[in-house]
Structure formats: C-alpha cells, structure tokens
Length: 285
Ligand SMILES: CCCCC/C=C\CCCC/C=C/C(=O)SCCNC(=O)CCNC(=O)[C@H](O)C(C)(C)COP(=O)(O)OP(=O)(O)OC[C@H]1O[C@@H](n2cnc3c(N)ncnc32)[C@H](O)[C@@H]1OP(=O)(O)O
Image 1 (spheres, rainbow, N blue to C red):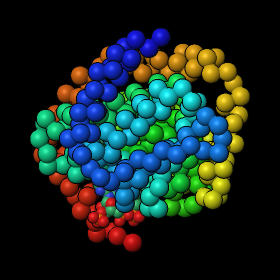
Image 2: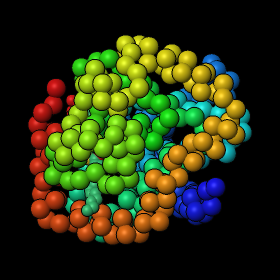
Image 3: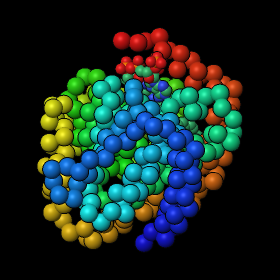
C-alpha cells in the first residue's frame, strides 16, 4: 500500500495550495483538456519559453495532477508541451542560482513532491515528448508509464547534469536504471548524454519514436491499449514494481534535501551554474 506516500501527499497538498495563493499569477502555466478518448486528460506544459521548472510552475503542475488523481472520471493522462521550443529544459537555473538555503530547501521539497506524485500515480501516464527534454525535464518521462518522442534532431533527451558540473539525484538515477539498465545508465549519466531520437529508442530511454505530428495520436492509441487492462490489477502491479524505488525517497527526503542544499550552496557549484546559464544566453538561435 501507499500509507507513507499518502501521508506526504496530504501534508504537501496543503503547502502547495498556500504557495499557489502566494504566487497569485494570472498566467496559466499548465493547461488540462479532456481528450477525444473517454477518461483521458491531456496536460499541456505551458511555461514559456522552455518549460523550465520554476517554483510557480512546479506548484501549478502538482495541483493539477492532484486534481486529476482525485477525479474519478480520469484513468490516464497524456503529458505534453505547449511550448514550441522544448518539452522541458529541466530545473530553472534561476531557482538554484544566487538564492539562499531556505529557498533551495523549499524548491527541492517541491521537486521531490512532483516526483512522488508522478511516480506513484494510480493513473496511466504517457509522456508525449514533442521537444528537447534535458536533465530535470526528464523527471516527467522517467516517471511515466510510456514515453513517445518526436523524430526531430532537435528533440534530444537525457540527464545531462554532469555537463553543468552537477550530479543527478538518486531519484532521477534510479528510474533511469530501472528503464535502461545499469551499464547504459552508468555511461549516460557520467557523460551527461543527450540522445537524439534514434539513439534514445535504441538505449530504451523512450519506447517509441514517431514523426512530430503523430506524437499526440500515437499517445492516444497507446493509452487505449493500457486502458484495456482493469485499473485495479494494473495499479497493484505498478505499485509492486515501483514501491521499492519510491520508498528510498520517501524514507530519505530530509537527508536528500540537506545534501542538495549544502551541495548547491558551494561557491564552485554556483560558479559553474552561472557560467552554464551565461553560455545558454550567448548561444541563442
Ligand atoms: C550530493 C547530492 C547532489 C544532489 C543533486 C545536486 C544537484 C542537482 C541539480 C538538479 C538536477 C536537475 C538539474 C537540471 O535540470 S539543470 C537544467 C538543465 N537543462 C539544460 O541543460 C537545458 C538548457 N536549455 C537548452 O538546452 C535550450 O534552452 C533548449 C531547451 C534546447 C531550447 O533551445 P532554444 O530553442 O535555442 O532556446 P534558448 O536556449 O534560447 O532558451 C530560451 C530561453 O530560456 C532560457 N533557459 C533555457 N533553459 C533554461 C533553464 N534550465 N533554466 C533557466 N533558463 C533557461 C535561455 O537562457 C533563454 O533565455 P533568454 O531568452 O532570456 O536568453
């Protein structure tokens, strides 16, 4: 069962709602639409320009996922991007650069919340990856049940953290190992590889590669196959497979936060993140 996670969710849901009130933004960063298939919602990420994970975006995403999880009309979610430039550029570097330990603590807790919410979801989650997907951006595909990538050379996917001088946390690494295996993860993580579509399919970080204009329709047809299985049987099986990995984070959340805050506060790490951000701004198309 999920008693530990359920406890966390209840407590964290209240925090999310308080935080959402704090932002009070008029921009809608997450759009949820019913699909043409009954019981399936399409969740569109819309934090322009690149769906980087700002605290506000993460908060809105968690609230929307929680609503869908609690709405018995939905059995599955297709997660995709409504930003032409990216599926997700991962952690918003402005959230982990030049801020204070209290901010880093809050940010990391919320990122953990998102991971738990997705990884232990009872719904079928399909990532329709219609743009580049880097580092933290892979959190969504890696916690999904199925991943479809657009066949476009710009659609690189992978955990490239080491290229920024940082390390992916264990709860990014573990699902990757579960999906692509130990040796391939060792290679991909240390070198910070971003895979183009054909290689992504070959290594197994995605399940299907299709032309960009077919990503959505393919996601719907894959969803239909998954929904043919009775929910209770699929959910029990998903939980049985995922619980040992999820428990590692549930049990070690506080230590993980402390490790992150002390790591990210180092001058050398801050310098290398600032350099990466400056380089991104220089390399504009
Ligand atoms: C001991 C314990 C250790 C625990 C762990 C410690 C640390 C863990 C760290 C957390 C793990 C996760 C990390 C991350 O996710 S770091 C982010 C990694 N992301 C990337 O490397 C992707 C960066 N972005 C790109 O490659 C490109 O932007 C693109 C997504 C391919 C899109 O390219 P393009 O269409 O050419 O657009 P631009 O590059 O011009 O980007 C548009 C504007 O967006 C800004 N941008 C892009 N990415 C980010 C980002 N991640 N954060 C903040 N801002 C970002 C970019 O600078 C442009 O801004 P501008 O228009 O103002 O110049």
